[in-house]
Image: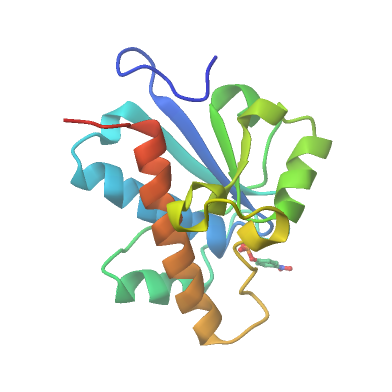
Length: 169
Ligand code: 4NP
C-alpha cells in the first residue's frame, strides 16, 4: 500500500497521533476534517486520532483544545483512545505530532514508511529536521501554547492536503 491512495477505491487513512489524545491530535483531526469537507472530498478519507498513552482513554478533548478550535470556527466531538496495532494496517499515514510520539510508534512496530512528523508537511519549514518539526505538547503550558498549536497544525494540514491531493483541478 502506498502512502497516497489513488483517487479511486478505498479511502486514504490518516491517523493523527500524539501522547494523550486530548490536545494535539484531536485538533489535527478536526482541522484536517474541516479542510477536506470544505473541498468536498471528505469521502476520500478515513481520518482519526489516538494517543500513544492511555491515561485519558474514553475522555473528551482538553477544554482548552475545544476552546481554541471554537475560536477558529471548528467544533468537534471526541473520545480519546490509545493507539492499536491494527491501526498500523488500517491507516496509510501515521502522522506523529512530535519526535517522541514518532519514536514510540516505531517502537510499537509501526511501518517506518507510514510514519511522518506532522510539521514535515508544513511547506514553510522545508529543510528543517528533528525537533524543529515538533508540535510542542501544550498540556502543561499556558493558553498561548494552544494558540501556537492551532497555527502549527493548520499550516501542516494545508501541506498534508496538498501532499495527498496534489494539483487537484
Ligand atoms: P497531547 O497532550 O499529547 O497533545 O494530548 C497531552 C495531554 C495529556 C498529557 C500529556 C500530553 N498527560 O500527561 O496527561
